[in-house]
Image (tube, rainbow, N blue to C red; front, side):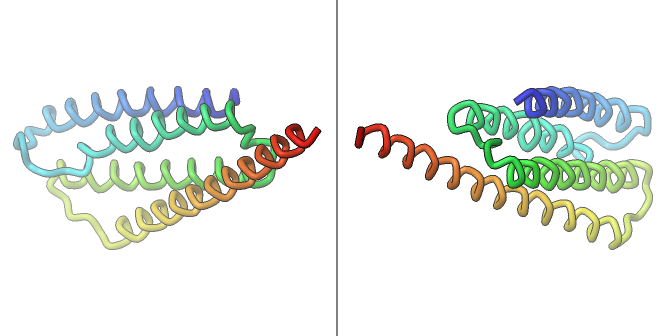
Length: 147
């Protein structure tokens, strides 16, 4: 649970910092207000997919003991975090290029797509872990009520 708590806190810090970076970087480079850059979405990705989702997983861990299935839970944690970091990194790279007036490359989109695939795989593993935890809890409840 401490690992989840620490990761959620880190994503909160990254979310706030990336919002500050977006505001200051665009201001320093005289980027027109209201014009699109992917830097604007990094703040939201870190706060919603990192901070909030991991706080929800922390609550699910407390309620259902998701990490009892250590192997699956570890897979979820690392797949999900790798996907989020990779996705956000590509958004920062592409957004920074946009602000600087440079053209992005298809490679950036491909790597960001890989990040999204890792996020998706992590979410699937999370649901498999959750279903197993629920089945364990139902089995325990059925055994307790039979006694």
